[in-house]
Length: 195
Image 1 (cartoon, rainbow, N blue to C red):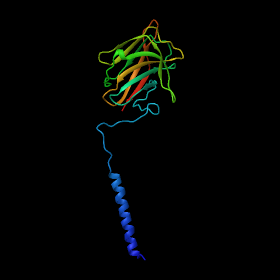
Image 2: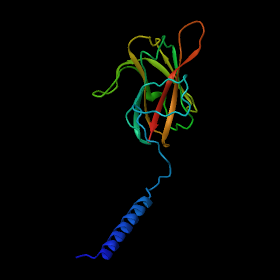
Image 3: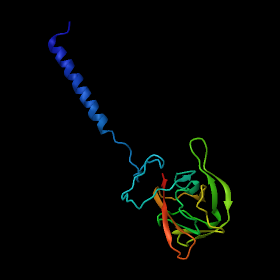
């Protein structure tokens, strides 16, 4: 039979052991990386510092999101994104998006939008001229015929190697419609995520 005094000591030892285990477990530090990464899925959540009413999110698809991987981007303009025909499309690129963009690796397509069971793919190639700025700050797209404001979705398809730097990159779309006054109108933004 265990005496009450030894039972008290066993309870104290158990309590001290449990406390030490909890303190030790709380001190285990997860290894830190040189760069803090923000993990997000572009289809589920999007975080913006300044979420103004002037911002409009555009749909995109990228085949790979790791740094320095070969990736195909579909920068999509759906039917709701185009209120009128597009004579010229300008895509602004942030200066820290350090990928090498070549006009030879760009094309304009009418696309079929993917979903849970299918991928976004090019249905019809639209003839267009592409001009990339020397400092890679923008891409200008001049289709041979204006992109109509119909039910179809259109995309600029870009095949590049992802940037060396991880992060979120906002590419903006500006469109010029046919008419007397050549004014570029903001269509929306694609927020690309590189891990």
